[in-house]
Amino acid sequence: MTRPAPPPGLLRHQGFRRLWAAQTVSVLGAQVSELALPLAAVTVLKATPFQVGLLAAVQYLPFLLVGLPAGAWVDRTRRRPVMIAADLVRCAVLLTVPAAALCGVLHLWLLYPVAFAVGVMTVFFDLAAQSFLPTLVGEEQLVEANTKLQLSETSGQLAGPSAGGFLVQLLTAPLAVLANALSYAGSAALLLLVRVEERPIRDAVRPGLVAEVKDGLGYVFRHRLLRPIALSAGIANLFGLFGMVQAILVLYAVRDLRLSPAGLGTTLAIANAGVLLGSLANGQVVRRLGVGPSLTWAAFGLGGTILLLPLATPGTAVPVLAVAMALAGLCASVFNINQISLRQSVTPAPMRGRMTATLRFVVWGVIPVGTFFGGALVGPLGLRGALWLAGAGSVLAGLPLLFSAVHSLRAMPDAAPTARSMSQETLHA
Image 1 (cartoon, one colour):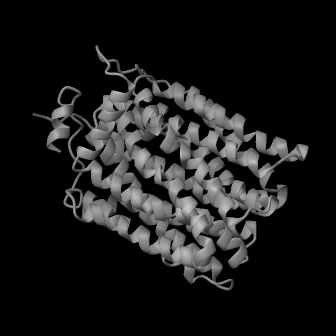
Image 2 (tube, one colour):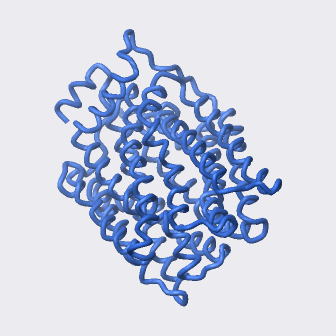
Image 3 (cartoon, one colour):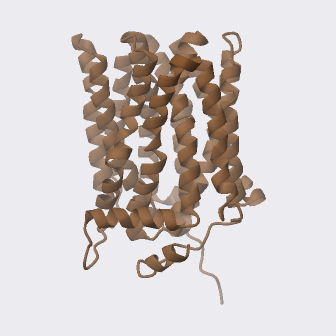
């Protein structure tokens, strides 16, 4: 019996190429804005550490408030129109920042609702995108697709901070946000060109939104592979680069290390080469260590690199921050490619939106908690003290994986069970 021919590479898949391009453009702009918004707060509006931490917290608060019902809703509808609408709304909302600056009415209280609205749309976009990908490329090409999407994220991360830093230097931070708004418009245009047959998944009887949210929570937290991933990523985000560290890194770089916006952008761009290396090396790492050990040691490594940040001084700021962030990017890339592919592989199509929403509720929902406490702890601990605490907490992220079935996993499991066998799978997982 001859084996079926393998599917052609995704570079020949027109729909995926357009999705890939849309993600690259969007991430590039988002990286500019991710640097420009806090820099606008710090350099233009003279925000305090607490206010900067609150700004970061507001952007991720929607993952706590609307993440779970959004996942159930996404499972009821087609995903591509959701992604397009989210891009267009994010574009419109971000345009208010440069408009307010040009009119001379920019205030910190405008940045808060802008960050919140962008966060809400990001919730819907991300949930739809992760559920849309298996429909577009098929189950057997998920690892390749996620690797390429990680590369697109890396491309934005490599160019975005440097471009953002120089745009802030040349145009001021509020006007640099315009680049992010335009990137979302470009992403929406590219997604409009993606052609795929996508029908909303409709059961004969739907139990209602609340019951579906409970099903998603139960599926994740009863699953022997998804539960430790949720705990590990949640700890990493609470203390790490998206949580406590995000709240204070810009302040630490500008005020303690005395880096200019352009210098900070260049440093982060150099550092993000680690993400590119991790994306390229992931296949070799998994072949050598296996899926589970790769996830486990990437989680430990990601936490350990944060402990390098408080060692920097004004004289060593660029090399120390670049090395620390590059190593963090490498570990994060390996972790993300494999945990996303694993999640998509073990979850049936009717549950993917709710699974992703539950993971995001935990993993991204702790980010506003981390950013809030990161900003609040600067007062009693100082910027370096808060970074030491964040690093120590981040190292704990590897423990849920080390002491679970994930660590012994050598390869990706078989494709997800059908909807009919889904409840039985969760009970025995």
